[in-house]
Image (cartoon, rainbow, N blue to C red; front, side, top):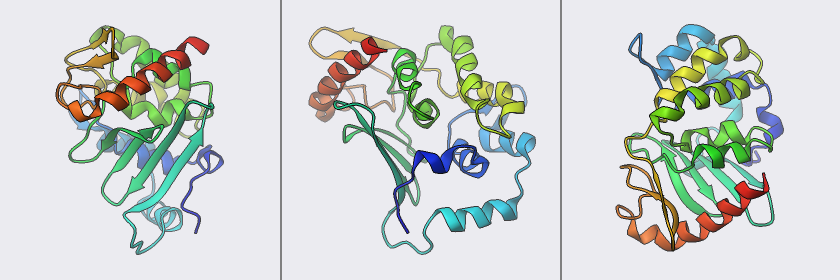
Length: 220
């Protein structure tokens, strides 16, 4: 089985998006539901059908920790790599680690402006969405953007505004991004790899990636 996941496999694949979104940190604040519980309530995915899909989509009894992966070259300067591991989903830009979804998550790496620049590539906005970090003031606009992209996935479309609200709740940071002259954008948010005070060993990688992302946004 080819471990590489093509974007074509993901178009309209409700099982993949249900599986993927259940890893997000979002929640329904009004009803006090984690995102997996919220999705289960509105999408009503058949558990047996989902289990059958997982058996086909992920290799059974894989010895390698990386079950499958997405790898796309977006420009000559920028590529993404997302690894679906046994207990985590791990994100890279240009082979630089930017975060993961797991019990020990690291996220809040991309700004809203940066993530929107990925939207011109098929499904990249949704794939990189868990790495987005926003301020409370950006929540309403972010929710609208997310709903627009979710509406392109059949079955999710009817529930896009609600799912978007759940996702957005997990993207709001306590501390925002800061522009540092020599380094570019950083933050001091816990669990963010872009917090170079907490992750000083990433300084060189983040500085290089900041320059590429800045050019990427300007070309949008």
